[in-house]
Length: 216
Image (spheres, rainbow, N blue to C red):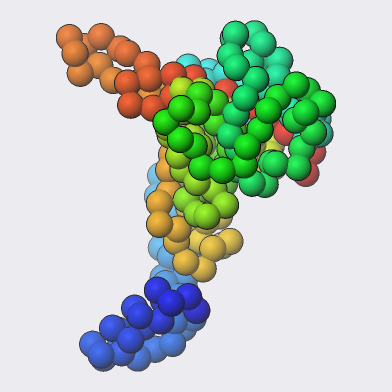
């Protein structure tokens, strides 16, 4: 148990809730499994095709590669096409890719105000809406997707789920404790507060580009 969980456990014990943490989590899981599934759209066909189509409606762009080793070249091509700098920050899990071979300068750290391009992964992607789901943490700093002007997300095709319900179920199955923040990214930042005129990049990235990696 983490220090946070130990503190919360002591609070629960003082309030008379003395069941061990794992027992309480088992009870929660059993309760969720016993609930009837709520109505939801039927998502048929290939999830990748559906995700790409829905992401396009949200002003996101997508490129697809066969394996992760092709990601740096795909990102370099995107930066070239849009006249963007070949310098970016990324999540640590992608630092070992051959960025130099594609002419991209990479730093694995949280983004700062001066950074223009951020490269992240995603916990999963949701086919129903074309949405990315990311989790905060030391190895997945949210600033890399929120503070930059251009956000590039690397998503494994196997991590595309049909709907929001499956995304939450996957999170519960893989993480005993919820992260501090769960972020849902549905295209570039936008607002229509002023005269109902849509403006992109008002409080976040102007662009969101997804690299879908087909291989596991």
